[in-house]
Length: 217
Image (cartoon, rainbow, N blue to C red; front, side, top):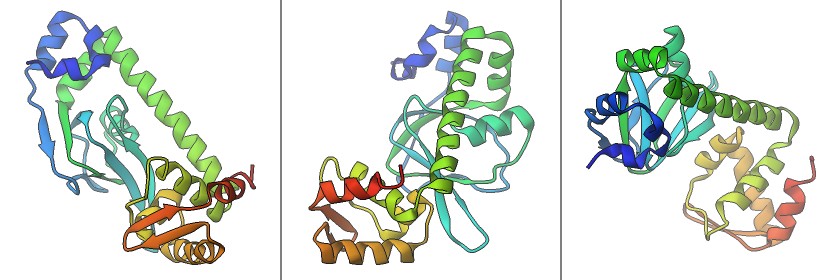
């Protein structure tokens, strides 16, 4: 069966272009697989069919920050820029869960970009959406206190139950240091807002966290 039925955005391409893409073979990567690192050259355009890829950057201090995640139907800014401008990656991409994807080789990607208007629209629309998200991230990190960002992230992740993530992972997701997360969690635990365990956080008082998350707005 064609993998294109899992990528609805590509189903509007011309039959010949769909055939070229359908000749590509999906691959499945386990969680924790590194797809690219800083300094690598972009080899192709990844279409995520299932799972999630996290793209992060590590500063000179060693502090890591999650830039964005790529889920089915979403694109990777770093890859698009690399393919269009021959620039190397400046971030790292790693699968957050088992991930199934197809890599469109650079040559085929550029050929489709030149000759297929639907493919070109798809790529640049996804790129524009991702750029909008990145600008929002810059605004949030620049103008919102770390504890407010952390409260908002905890609320989002806990919508379906306890959060299974380390303090380091949460720190990277909100652009702060692990020590900041540790201090905030200690304070919130004393206030009765959350309960923490090894690699797990349970929200007890959502209203209090919601008030904190919105206090910088």
